Length: 616
Ligand SMILES: Nc1ncnc2c1ncn2[C@@H]1O[C@H](COP(=O)(O)OP(=O)(O)OP(=O)(O)O)[C@@H](O)[C@H]1O
Image (cartoon, rainbow, N blue to C red; front, side, top):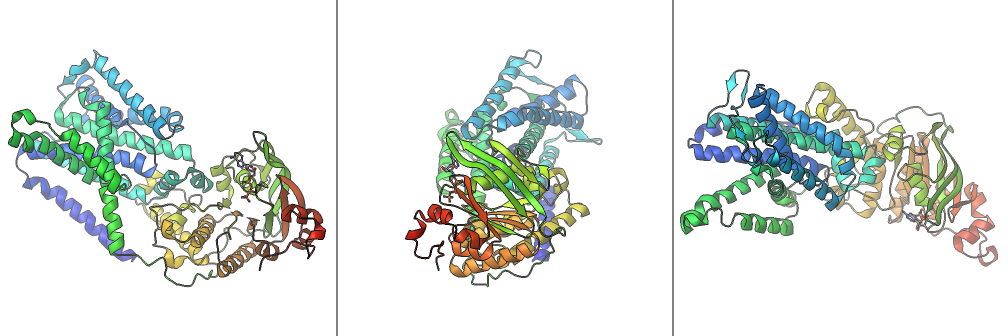
């Protein structure tokens, strides 16, 4: 399977090199060459958006503004400062990156249409600055920009420019393709689907989003530099907000989730532009130049959004998956947890205190969701947390995992104060969790989903992970092995290639545990893992939790299934209205009159067995 994939990749790279090397030789007329150059520049611009919108889920209408920084940066560098084109291009990209780095964090705090408005404003401000700058020629701009040259090689005729643009596009594609399946790429894609879950697996959301924004600005800037060196003239007109919208349309039509989408989107846009500037006027006369372009683009956008929201490439991918299905989700392969495939990350002395909580309180307005809770969680133990609906169990897990910040109290992890540590920092210390409603990442396979859980184990950043050095390849192999081992022990190995969102609820619950285990945690918090599972699945889950306990992991189990809780856990912590009602062994808790009253809502006398009954 792996060698087949390697073979296919090598063939793909060879085909791409052949097309880039020989394709331009077959195109003789300068008009078509100009079309290819425009197509390539649009595709590079849209690729930047794929990194930001498709991978990181952040919306931007500033792509043309970054292209303006590249174009004007190259123009100023070469014409005014006498720098070589490559230096001008790099400096312009660095300026775009720095600008985004400076404004990225505050802007990316905004979501949805607020973020779109902020990036739109950024684009508009830059456009107005350029239009009103006498120094830069105002709306007329300025010319005299030399063609791109590097190491004595000058790209001064149109065919050479085609080569230049195609090579840059190929490099951009290489980057985007590698990044998609890299550690950071997976983290971004997880973030796009659910920020809370990604953070709970160690992803620093603000940093990751800023990185994606910086990268998209660099792509935009490089495309702008290419534009300046091929047009040899710049003015503000092509860098207005409408061009940002157009590039977004290119990305959406092709499909923002795939690095190949911009190729399709840019090709479609080129064809539409071509039709409106030559085909339609050829039929209707000169007066019809440009007619129908905006209408056709708009119509196509609406059709794509309605019929194939993942764009043309996304729709083709779905079609391919339907025609060549991976192993079926209904595959009745045994879901028996296997023996541990890897040893736990470190030898833990049994019984050591891992988590210590004192006076933990969380208020939501007037509601005390968790009130003054003290709690200790040891290695090699399962602590059951039970309580009626609304008792504060999920809030407790959210507090322990850093998803929520306590109003009062203290949380120590391995003796270190983590009371106000954000989720990604708590995860990095070795705490994993699942969610009451399982969150799997659509668009990712089961294996990729679990690979997200290895984020805290890996080290490779974006720059490193796109360059396949032996160290990066070794790390990726190790992460893959850790993910496969976690899947195998949870009995999901046979579903590794299936799309995660195609799994049944029961499998999704188990998948969440596998994702947590892939990071080799010391503490695992489970929020109702057995809800929705059938009896056999519950038994398998209980067996898995026993195995994990035996390996030394500290487990906190929130669960409504009393049979499972009482048979499995070492101690039970009972919550009622956010407060601790009782802590004890299952036997102590089972027969506690207060617990019976709180849990069953009846007096002890009314309960025939005088104890919490378990549903069989
Ligand atoms: N984000 C929030 N904002 C306001 N109130 C909240 C929030 N989250 C939880 N609460 C309230 O805090 C209390 C505890 O909720 P929590 O979800 O922790 O209970 P639970 O024990 O997990 O319940 P269940 O068993 O139904 O999942 C409830 O009264 C709930 O309405």
